[in-house]
Amino acid sequence: MFETANEIPLILGRVVTILPLLLLVTIFMGKRAIGELPIFDFLVILTLGSVVGAELANPEVHQLPTAAAIILIALLQRLVAKWKLSSRLFGRYITFEPTVVVQNGKLLNQNMKKIGYSIDNILQMLREKDVFDLLDVETAIIESSGSLSVLKKPQKSGITAEDLQIVKSSSLAIPVILEGTISEEVLEQFNLNEEWIDEQLRSQGISDRSYVFFASLNKDHQLHISLKNEENLIIPKIKH
Image (cartoon, rainbow, N blue to C red; front, side, top):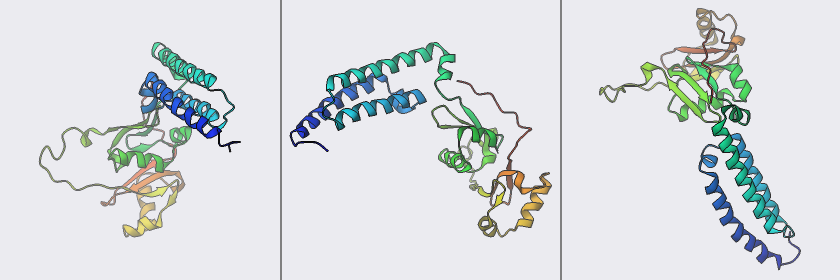
């Protein structure tokens, strides 16, 4: 990779000098750039990595221009951050808008497609929030940073069973229909069949499985359904 062994001390010297500069620049940029990684800050970090990587990989690149580029990138990031604080309109142009993905226990297919999130993505993020059943969710929002915010239904929040010294059984809903396709394995687990599923769908006014975007089943044989096109839901408008 290097033409001579004499270049190795040069590379080591650059590593030793460039890392403290990167540390100072990162502190200068603020912890928000590291903690949340909005889209612009993500691009800044990618650019910093490219600049530093080019210098370390090529000993012929002079270090002073690299250091100047790092400092200028940090100054640009701080300037953009100040613009975002002073102008919400500007901030909306350089980042993602929050997106509602669950409303009143229903997965919103169209919104999920817009941001490229799958059913598995949302279910995993809900489990990380200690939510194991969509029925417990009033509203779930994918924030501009990519994290998930969850508002539970009133009966699922507030005073807890522990506060009242009540012992409750846990509720785990298992996906049984994904985009119109039934999981035979889940049906066997619950000792049910496709006829039972079809009957439950008809009882909720659904004539065809292909209309179902997602359906889950809990131990009480309660089937919770999200359609591919939910038309009667009132979805809140979430802005920065």
